Image 1 (cartoon, rainbow, N blue to C red):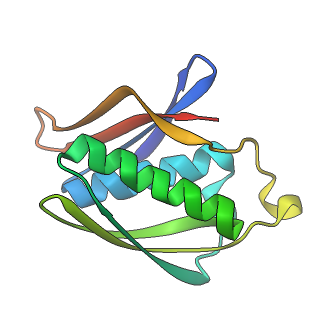
Image 2: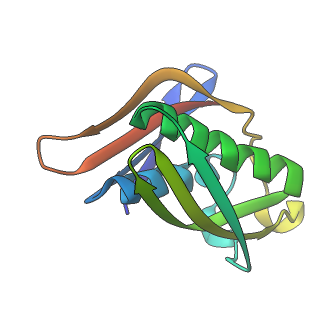
Length: 137
């Protein structure tokens, strides 16, 4: 599940790719964590369920990433493992993570929300899925 971040003015872009749409969404989520801290420092200790629904894949990606940001903010957690299932316009995921430890995780930023700028969910020419968005930090 490849992922990456990319610069975008004062914000940061997150991008996931994969053989399936689910893998691409999971990669985008891992890229979101990497915008905050090194994902390797986040132990997958506690499972959290997330459910989203949206009329199209782009809006589903926005809802998915915003649901993660909400849980990070309200539960004071970071996540490093993502199991995503998408059925049409509905997403169900189990995510694993742990409580934020500022000394160990050394967060570089706080994600505030996902914008519609450079939002893209599509199958690429090589058959891989791409899921990308820009996150306000």
